[in-house]
Length: 534
Image (cartoon, rainbow, N blue to C red):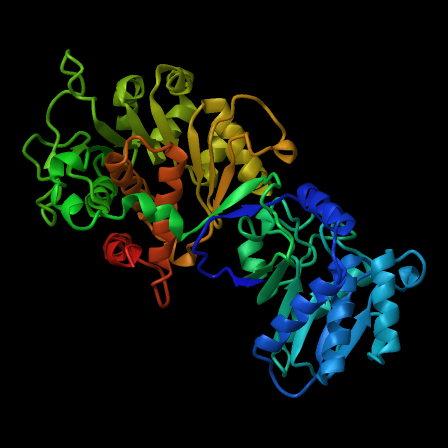
């Protein structure tokens, strides 16, 4: 069944390349009629018929030498038989015969027998109504070269030509790695390159690389067809976060709603906002309030005792007491959001926060302080053993500082980077960026490729866009996360982090154009309370 994943309603499993190949092998061994490749080609043909096409030119298929190309050949044959003009360009002529996989070879013979126009090698078409990238599939380990690289460059040039035809990638854009969402590494002779598609049809399984790294930018709108294969018992590498992640925060109706009061909605303490950066803590506090927390306190570091927390939000309360009252009364029941605009000053209070906060969202300068100070790092790592829960919310540079590597290394495998950080610091990690990644600490060091349903999973957020690339949006996310967590303290930190991230991204998708200012983002997220209950 074909699914449009622009706004998925329910969480979906994401399978690695190795897991996808194993599922494919099992499906081939037990596949009823019609064969799997016929079903894949039919799914592709149906999507092509449903998509808008530009002009009267043929649908162009760029088909590689493997099963991905076989899927394209089946679709081309079916559309040709349906009466739609098609043109196939077959790459890698050296493998046009017996070296081609058996199913792909059969698809080629069937297309030839049906009279599908086929030519060998890339030739820029005079016109086409839609172009289909069926060049490369899951097995890619290095950058495409030769005829395949030439075809990728040619496909990417098509939308800028007169016809302006869109590109549809089969399974994943050629050149993109299924597990990481990054183009396969190249060298001086074969630089990294990938198809820039406007649509992508993922077949049989969804791959994590479609949704993180450069995946979302290269895939465009993502579609999925499981080809009728039941994936229920298959181990997945990760999970795609969808709208159902918001379910725990839907307010009860009728009598249950009348029983709620501010004392039942949890307390949040925001620590940060050093001089020159007060706005960061104020944004986090506003977000916690808008998320639904009952009482929100803010400690603006190095501020006067009588200074207003936020004159525009009188609901926010100032925290004037010492963090520790000698009786432990500061900490029970409170969710702490620490680090937003904390500057150097946050380092002076962080040791006590790390030692006592029952639930802690650590962001921005709080993360930088941990990266600088081994003593603070040790306190952070010890929290899980003390029964204290933590969510870290780094962007890639902050994650690189904590891991002692470069941003390029973090981005090269975002899932592995998030999981490594979670395991090192024994915290839940929300690695921000395109396709934010949420990772929980595991009890062992199982390689990502060997995860089972019993191993804590990684999750990737499906919402959001570049409207969030604006100052303060991270502070809003940290505060919103704290506000949700305060209301549901018994939930797993990863569930709260995933929901906050998804809510944050949904609000960004309401922006028509340009950046979404952080203060406006809070209000957009607040407005989604009503939609979340629809």
